Image (cartoon, rainbow, N blue to C red; front, side):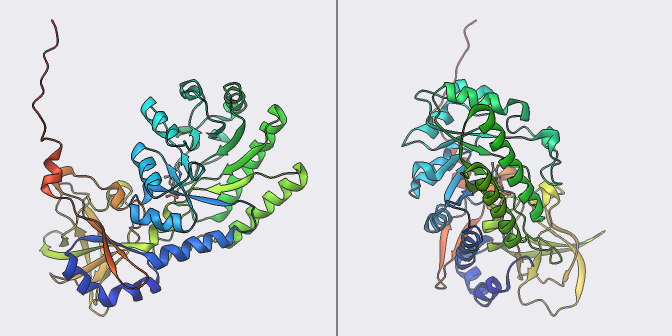
Length: 421
Ligand SMILES: *Cc1c(COP(=O)(O)O)cnc(C)c1O
């Protein structure tokens, strides 16, 4: 199922009151659900020494959410300066920050390496010489298996992905990093997105262990950690099956144990899940404000794709509940926002209980890659974010954008320049 029954039971009885108090639209996240999922993950991988999740900050970059991750003992996977700042603001230690950028510039390297630094995860062999001195003692590379691995449907074919060093470059990458002064090593890959077939992740772990053995035999390097990336899928549709995290962790643990028997040591395993950690624990709540009956029936709501891009970007399915509407007769509608783009739709030709103006619509699974992807096109502003605490309190954790915010980048001291002829 998409949103859990437990989350519904915590949220739905009070939702009308919450909407009246804060106004709509908003994303609301479920603290109890996030903490529970985090504990489940730690328990599943307890058999691997030093297992660590680095939460992918881009999925839900809100400080209050990152505080929950810190509370769980998780680190942070960052790929921009803003994300580094957020991780440090919630108290992440250098070794709790993985900087997985790509097409990295000097300013990003400087930001990553200051304030105690972080784990630098390099995307390309050409970046080795661009890392400023002193070269970090611990270095990691992102590995792209290319034709050795068929990508999953969502992330596409590794050969076409801009990320990572190739199989042919991987030995040279570690050799050159060692020449520059690296003494400790990690290895990373990310080859799946929203993958619910657990065996794909087991194959990823197997692949990294093979590369670790290869690099060890060529360069006599022992890896400190292997990072299998994120990409763990969630069921967006009611009929979708959940990722079998128990079977996944059991089989991956076995692979690490086998490696340990054969090599006398095993690297730690880390991951950087975003979607699986928080996706199901957030919903977008929006009110129906208009109805339209033309070639199709339309329900117009007070949110638009500035709150949730996934349907427009990927034709992604997000399940929708109508608060207190389950028993009504059904009709087929498009649920739309007010952006001047015809893909500004939360649902297309969806059978839903009949919606009345004023109804609250609950759009599921917006706890990852939801608010974070929003933009301001058409002058449509990004909505507020709320956090439903375990004790029933509701906290505003990001205010809605205002017109003042929107115009801020055009308010500046006059500056003009005439190039010399
Ligand atoms: C986006 C991303 C993640 C998180 O992906 P999810 O699908 O949210 O788990 C992890 N690592 C890297 C490098 C990413 O770009």
